[in-house]
Image (cartoon, rainbow, N blue to C red):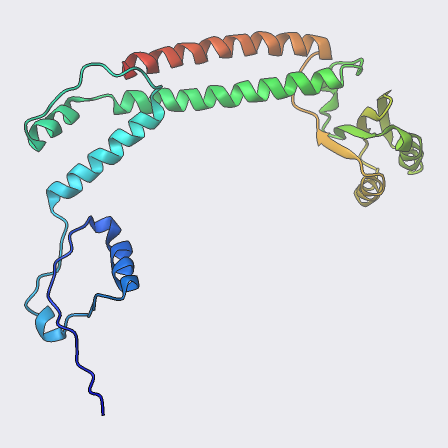
Amino acid sequence: MTLLRPEAMSKIAVLGLKKYRQQIVSILQEMSVIQIEQISKEISSYLSTEKESEAHRHIADQLIRIRGLLSTLPPTSLGEKIRFSSIDEMDNALLRLDIDKNVASLEREKENILTEIRNAQNNIKLVGEFSFFPEDLDILHLKSARSFFGRIASGKYSEFKKKLESNNQDIILYSKEGEKITEFVLVVLPRYPSNALASIINLYNVHMEAVPHLKGKPQEVIEKLKHDLGELEKKLENINSQLMAISQ
């Protein structure tokens, strides 16, 4: 009868960063040459629970803060490196870096301006597409009617129009027919049944969207939007310049 004898084993200590603890344990287990056991309750009673020190938490907070600033500020070439003789010296330098509120304020303003720029660009494109509408766009925002910009395959437009007009003709329709797509401006009066309109839209695969709240004839609106867009781009350039100055 062959007796199984245990291999001689030695106790070892493995050093690693806390954030890689799970990966380290997994690797050691997969090697199949190391035995990892949980400590007993008796032994654990003599061990203190590991707690992160206040200094560690403070350094971690500062690291998150600096990473946030780096993600916001525009990149710039590195100047002369600064060497710190201690963590306290580095911490004092970070605390003197009082730019957080200014950067956050500029970033919020930048996001608002970028939103306005996107809206202006979208409206310029949209109004340009429906510039055949001959009247002031403001008249499309009646309390007693619903107005839409729409697109439909040109081959389906005639049937679509007839279907709309079959409901007591409670609509006003302006259109511009293209080779493939016909754009139209649709004003639906209150008596027009909503369920009938929804059915017709689905039947002919029509794309419709609400008319934006703009005043003036299409060409006038486009000119104003382009002027506003230019002013917004100047503001954005100014904010970017301020952020670059802070970054440097």
